[in-house]
Amino acid sequence: MIVGQLLLAIVGYFIFRAIGGSLIKRTFQKMKERRKMNNNRAQTLEKLTLNVFSYTLLFIVVVAVIDIFGLPIGPILASAGVVGLAIGFGAQDLVSDVVTGFFLLLEKQLDVEDYVTIAELDGIVEEVGLRTTHLRAFDGTLHFIPNRNITNVSNHSRGSMEALVDIGISFNENISEAMKVLQEACDRLAEEEDAILEGPDVLGVGSIDEYDVKIRILAYTENLQQWGIQRKLLQASKEALDEAGIEIPVPQQVYVPDNNNN
Image 1: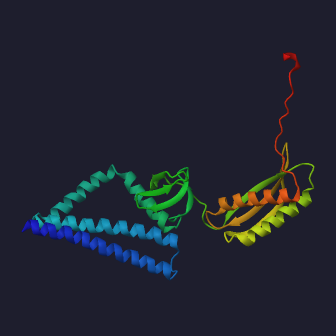
Image 2 (image 1 turned 60 degrees about the horizontal axis):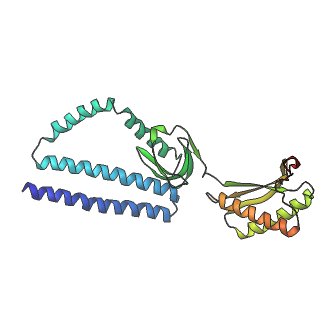
Image 3 (image 1 turned 90 degrees about the vertical axis):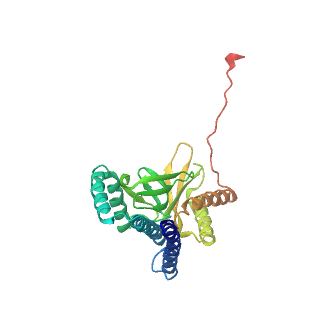
């Protein structure tokens, strides 16, 4: 009899977990389709809701198993409360993780797929949990960061992103002509790339170095598209300057033979 009840409890756990998980996913999917919530926020809350649902369901199953064995639930829960209180004094870090995670979500400091800097690490947020935040670095490393270690959040995904490049030209070239050529190249690129939200604009001379004059170009792009646009800006600028016959200088090394060794 007890074995049958245990099997029923276990089977019921997996059935309710599957049904509940499916309902949660469908609910958030409908929110995204109806645009009641943006995709990143929906993914963040969906994973959190799934975790809370799983833990709650597991607790119910544990209580049911205790009841199946005929053990008094009240005293056990009371004892668990006392033990939990004692453990709590030694588990302040866990409490801190949960509280910090709660406020991270409540204040919408970060969402799944945001590009952020937290705990001195850069990467893309994969999951925001009550205990840890999962951050995927650009080299592929997955960091599990305890929420209590997140004291500052730099979210690089809120608003448009900046694509900034400096193009060097020779001192002998006409700066105004070079700027005109570069702006024309930028205008052509803006028509081709939907990821560009504003610009690119040739701002003018950014600096004068030992070998060249740097002309600065600035564009604003969609989230995480800035690096690709920077590469395309560099390519378009190089091709436009070559076509116009404007020199991009490189450091030159002159070899002077040592006649004393002859």
